[in-house]
Length: 139
Image (cartoon, rainbow, N blue to C red; front, side, top):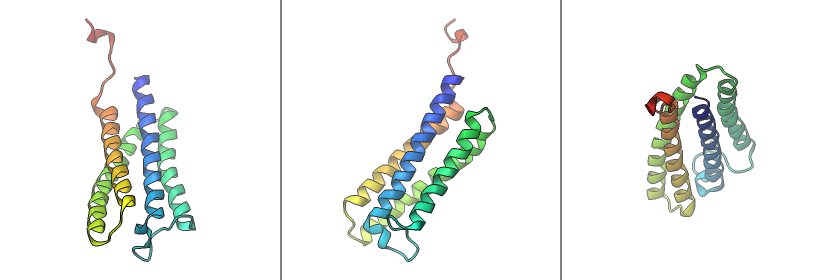
């Protein structure tokens, strides 16, 4: 059980890193010029968005890591909502790519988004489907 908890914590940290890098990549790209409320790299809005994102990841993760096990279910809801939003974000990136000629940054953003979907799927697997191997499994 403890090994599974460690894997879940590592997976959550990796998801937070990917989501943060997605925010930074999109703020560095020409996509940041689209729309009046978009965050450009280095602006207060980008840093506040990054800080909010990390707080949303780290507070439940810290509570889960100290032993509040029901936080896993709250994190699962956030993971599912994140996966759904990333799925639609990929669709938006494809549409933006078709309308505007945005080059490599778009492919990097799509690649990070796909990795994020994979990590979130792995998180759900670790949280609910996988079970630790016990001594009775060998008998």
